[in-house]
Image 1 (cartoon, one colour):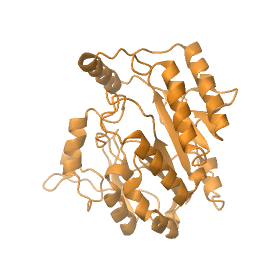
Image 2: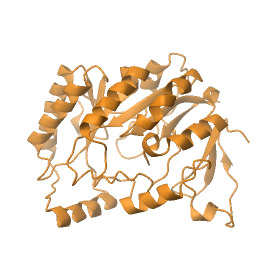
Image 3: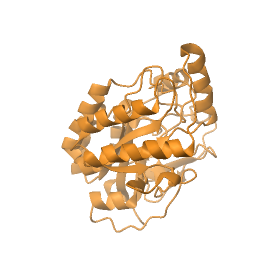
Length: 316
């Protein structure tokens, strides 16, 4: 059976808040996760021989940095998507300071190499606090600070899912921020300016789920990308299928071991969390010794527990 790509995680920030749990699961050689669409409990192997790569998504890799050399020495290939946007606190209430984020990204690149680090300036939010010209300036300053630490920059324009729309409405009420959705021409103009900046800093610019913007120095984003994994580990012979997570997504199939409503960074545009209070409560309920990142009430002691569906390579 082909080795699997493990995503940790689009649904939460595992390195920032759940590194201890992850290290326990890597030691055990497996973890469990709950399918958010059907509720099924599933199990997946985390043994190096069963994992093609571990792909991390984070705003703060610092808690995981001390263990990275051991993780790689055990035979794991790792890649990181590191989000750094430098937005004001009205939009990102509890993210690390910009200077610290840049410093940690550079430290990460020193351990795993710049090819394994993707910088995400994502999503782009246009508002009275974050106008288009401000994005060009902010992107340029961060790109300059990250030069040499990454070769790839990813972006998208914010998608107004129900959670995001309600969050923006709250920010508008509490802080007087006016949000707006840009037209296609404005998106194109801004993206081209970002592509010029990225190129000057030795980076390729990728548009995530924004196919209309691809071209003229802007490439189609594939966040979980088999070609990227092959560059990180030349022995990757697997030909995994494309498995989009939403419209215009170009990602390769992966197993996401995270859980929704578990990241307490409190970003106003987050699609994976209904509110910071819910995420904080789930963080308090989190057990780093559990096989699940967060255990739903129906799977706790005394409840009717379903048997996990075995995933290829998972220990029984």
